[in-house]
Length: 242
Image 1 (cartoon, rainbow, N blue to C red):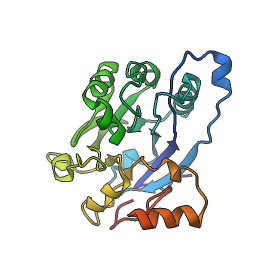
Image 2: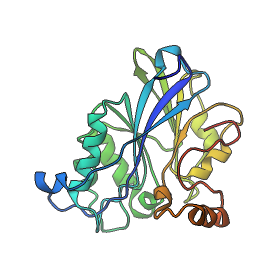
Image 3: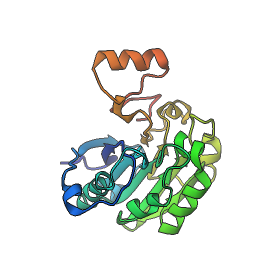
Image 4: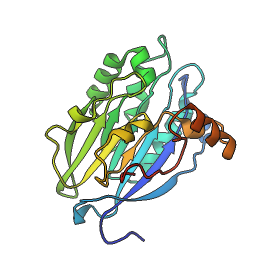
């Protein structure tokens, strides 16, 4: 059950994926993903958006080590959840030479409104080509920009901040002209949340950490703490934002 208002229910599936060879139905069935449901309270959310559901996929890394079936299964998990908006939070490939053409082919099966931002590996590979291919698929791609969707008949604003790892993030530029009310922030690098307007009650979805990659409790948290801001996985309160 969801609270009466100021709630944004999130689905977060942080996926690491890579090399796409042709996937048949049997291969697809070998991959199963746990879908995590996270309830977020968002300041200023329009009451009509109470219980809006966001499906998130991040860090799929289409390339040398990921069979097509894994990506297809992840896409199917999102489609089966019947979310209101799909958020893609970066790193669609890993390195130059990865099959960029497979990005729109595999992700193009996502249904509904899809909004995407970009990660460090996208910039290190060919972010302009990846963006063009996703735009042609009908997705909305954002690089320090915002867009307004119609969700349940009312305005819902997505603010997409570019990658902070490669120093392309510009929070001020992203917020220019953005409507008040229902808002969601997408920012590939978790530390970008430190730069959001304090106390705004914003929800920010990020990727990059792969859920800690291999998560060993306090050991993994300690490594992230020594390396910088300790955002390895899960939910954090950052200066009044989530």
